[in-house]
Length: 613
Image 1 (cartoon, rainbow, N blue to C red):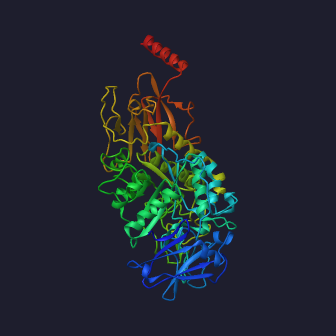
Image 2 (tube, one colour):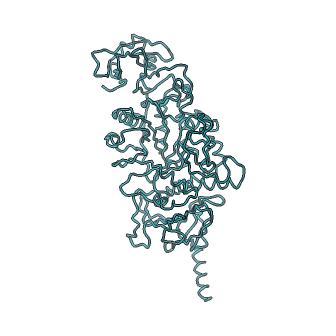
């Protein structure tokens, strides 16, 4: 018999693990005393697993009928101590996030979950090359009044933001732990805002639901349904502390896939990755983890922190990083696909990465001793907040550089909610206990930084439009079709030769459009991405574009807006032989046919030059 409560035709079946003989306690919602106490029969024990069955007739006789039965709740008692069902599918009694408990109390589980209709819902088909992950905290995403949603800090609040998310271009939401975790155990001094700790994994968090209608299961399913209708995926993070049995972990993931139609799981803590990858029920289920296994399936993604560390150092302007940047421009053979990010939950936000050189975690109450001391950050000249325009302009440019490093690299990009509009945590790089304005998104920033949001939106669209970016197979570095250039090539300030000496901070990467075809077989435009993280300008000689085309400026991190030019509005370069790139800047050039008028003028100019000679 499966552990937990199972609803059968004639009643309920209950199984629980206990050291001594337990008792099932049944309550009516909002009543403190149990209406029914049923000891588990000793002769139905198998090892430490106790089981019993209760018929609906017995439940009705105890007052559980009609609406009362549907709202019934339960918990267990053994050895004089009450405890919650580790397999409970929904919980009540701890509905307000971070509310301190007067004493250690056991959670109560709902006996029945609400009915739900999926209707014509179907899982979205997201092209792996186009997948963009947006990581958010359910509560912090919309808890602020400035979010403009009705149900702030809830699953429903996320659903209200779907139009914004779709317009941004993200395909996949990744939620920090949103199962029923202990955010403030009895006696705790600091709130566990992130959710890494003791967890009842089978139940979505009750305090992440609307207050007047506590239906965690229904609200999470509604969110999945709404996201799928919008063509978006939902991935949830599951934290395991290593004490869970293998079958428990597998059952959790299977349950969320089947019952909630979840698209994937981000695994953290300690978990049996090998068993998860081999589980037949989880084939095709998106799985993300930092660990890189010896064998992995097609749906496994490695969340490698090396990208964050090395790209932060390159962005900062450190030496010796050109080989690392080149390595992230390709996928290595026989390795799982990679998830890339520059900012994550534990660390600086993207805005703080370019505004602070030291962590500022004093508000955590640990004497600023917590959090990483290695942030590889640069404050652009002033620590923290400033009104100096030159510093603010530098920080905005560095944020654009960061997004370009992320979206021009091969792998699946992930960025934190709010990074697109400069969300700050005031230099706190370990805001695990900050259930307040430090961690909540200030949506007024989205209006203030509309230009930044537009840049990220256009950058996502640009990546999606060009198969050369985000390719799923390793490059050959060969011109197998004899078109005059290999599929991918590396360049320095002079073409066709990468300059990787330790003092270099600049490079160019050429992606041949011929070898980057769309799903309909149409060749992409060739792209030349030029990076200069030196603080001085450098002149780059340009490789010749394909015959009949010329280099156009498509994206630039420097100068005035727009920084990502619209399709058809790209600027043809007056000088097709070289490009002077300012310090701490990135550009993307695109090879496009010249307008007929421009071609005619150039032909006449060449003829005039010839006649003059």
